[in-house]
Image (tube, helix red, strand yellow):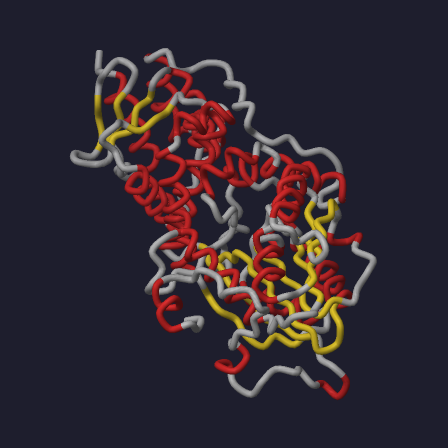
Length: 455
């Protein structure tokens, strides 16, 4: 009888009509697949059952998160993900998306027969417990709280391991002189403060304030009063402690509050950093209109948001099943053009759009390196399954940013004042000038330390 790997790989390649870009080692020790390709390991029969019952990305993710499918020690995770991503895209373009219908049809009978002969055919495995199970109406306030809690309320100690000292969970800004993740994150926060034109005495709203890094940076270095809101219990507790430890409770208020519940505008400026992805396309105009009402005439909005490429003709809405089930339940990505259109429909004038796509790839690779360097402690904090979710999601996103499958954009918009006036200086160079408080300039890297100005 042929070895397990030979049977399974041969049947799968016949079904797909193409050679898979990986080498496979099965539970009996046999190997098959492309010579020299990255090696993945099927540790048991359940790995194949995940894929038979849920073909494609979600089945692969379930097998990996559960530990039934793994990488050989010599295989590079980024290389594996890049190869799988390219192969999947080629299959989509060729109209070869594989679902359960195809596997149970005539083309899939050899694969099912191979699974039967190797003992891999069986009942559908239970999905790993890390998979989200949402309840309630999509993007209702209660369901949004469930989604946010699933991702953010997993333990602040774990996030400290991954994010590092900055505790900033969004794309950093990698100036040429930046020598660390912390310096790049400080540069990003300062870039946002400059785009918003913050000055001492202004009132800033930070929507989705996370662990309070933006609020602290703006209050300390720009002298503004800040209201930060989040619906993550653990984020709010952590941010409030940081504010108290910094002696800034008179200038920074952290609230457990939905963006739809903020009653006390107007604000002179609003920052929304990595939050709008949770809003959903059906609610986006409500989100943008709500921020417009909270902003004083002449005030600026900085919306920092992940985007996706527009759909190709005939291609379905390209949301990731893995990301939706395990990472950001109910999250939605839109093309940047759609986002800009809705922000303007809400009454804003969009003045600037800056892509930071390559910056996010670098940031994600730093987070993955942090996780891997602290792997034993991370598993002790959140369990092996969740640690594997994070490793897979961050590495896959790094590849997606590098390959231009997703992007990240800072959209600067203004609520026009009377007569349509924006209040912005005439040139971009002018409105990026710092207007700091009396506190020392933030640590932005070697170049700023040498010149005393922001790069």
